[in-house]
Length: 221
Ligand code: G3P
Image 1 (spheres, rainbow, N blue to C red):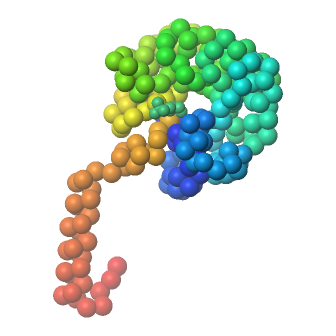
Image 2 (cartoon, rainbow, N blue to C red; image 1 turned 60 degrees about the vertical axis):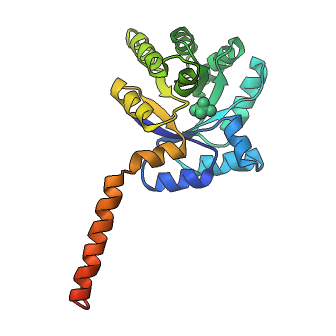
Image 3 (spheres, rainbow, N blue to C red; image 1 turned 120 degrees about the vertical axis):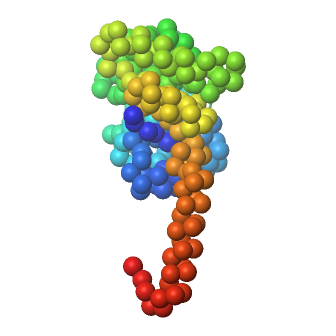
């Protein structure tokens, strides 16, 4: 499964990329707002920080403006995926950009039918928002299962990118379902790599090593 970092924090992107964990990054206007700086500088840094796909979101409402904006966003790098909202205008833009060879991530997907339409419009990725559905009392991962099942009946190249991930169980379930990608906030990725038994085990190995060194001055690995 591809792992993307859901952030506009270029430092976090560099840090997890050094571990070889990232297949790319997804951003949105809210994540950029959190960083506060000039969004052009932030987007530049993120695109330069990772080789894989970086989803940058359009902020226009009309498809013509989205297309122009998408083309401008692509100037940040060949790895830019243009993120368009799941609206009629967004699908028009998706169609035009995809036909032009520009990959598109259709975002804010909350139903199987929306995913089907995004796939028909040529989206490279469809992004179901599992956490927001769970928050509303629906079954976010159930939606992912339904979208995967539906797309598997046909030969769309569209990949399911699980978004609005809130905890490691979302990630494990996405992988269990065979979702092609998930985008994780840095805090979720951090939780995935930690385990209290790893910490306590390491602590006891280190303290035994210190004792051994005290009994054998000068010893080292
Ligand atoms: O990238 C968009 C998506 O992941 C947003 O997540 O936590 O704001 O619902 P959230």
